[in-house]
Image (cartoon, rainbow, N blue to C red; front, side, top):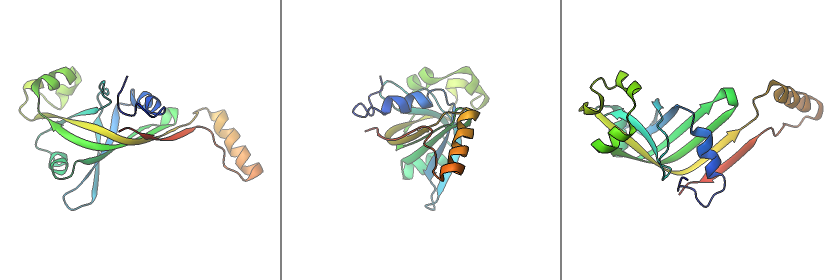
Length: 167
C-alpha cells in the first residue's frame, strides 16, 4: 500500500489509475521561469508512493530540477478516458543500487551502457497532491451524454473526478 495520501480515500484510486500508464508528461520550471514539459517513461510507484523516472545527467530537466524542484506529472489514457495530474517535489538520485533495482532492459535504448552508464540517474518525485478524471469510455455513454445535453441543456456527469491530498 502506498503511504502518500493514506488519509485520503481517493489516493488508492489515483495510484491505480496511473499504474499502467507508461508515459507521463513531466513539467519543470525552465531557467527563464517558463514551464517546460517533456514525455518521460514512468516506473512503478514504490511502497511510499514516490514516482520514479530514468534520466540523463546532462539534460535540461536536471538543471531545472536543481534550480526549482517543483514538478507536475500529467498521465493520460484516452482509450479509457483516464486523466491524472500529480504535483510534488523532484529529487535527483544517483544511487547505483536504486538504479539497478529500477532498471529494465528496454531502457538500454536510451542508456546503451546499461546501469554502468555514467550519464544515468533517477528522478524521484515525492507527490504532494493530485487530481484525476475517470470517465466511462463507452460510445453509448458518450452518445447518452450528447443526447442529454441536447434535450436538457445540461452537461452529463459521466465519471469520477477528485482532488487528492498525497502528503
